[in-house]
Image (cartoon, helix red, strand yellow):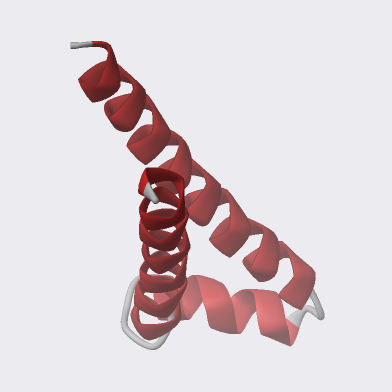
Amino acid sequence: MKNVLYIIKVVALACAAGVIMTILGAFPPLSFLYNWLVGHGLQNVWVGLMAGVIAICVSLYNMHHAKKKRK
């Protein structure tokens, strides 16, 4: 049961990070970067940046969870 709760938390964190990045992409300064990338046909770079932010958030949560679990 604890594993299911952990998985739900990780998925919720990833979704929240994706939503926040999407919203921030509409406001400066990230909107300038997003518009420049789209203007040059580099939408995949923006998707990669979003994936990187999500991966960092999930990795930091995993580190925090592992450290908390050891205590």
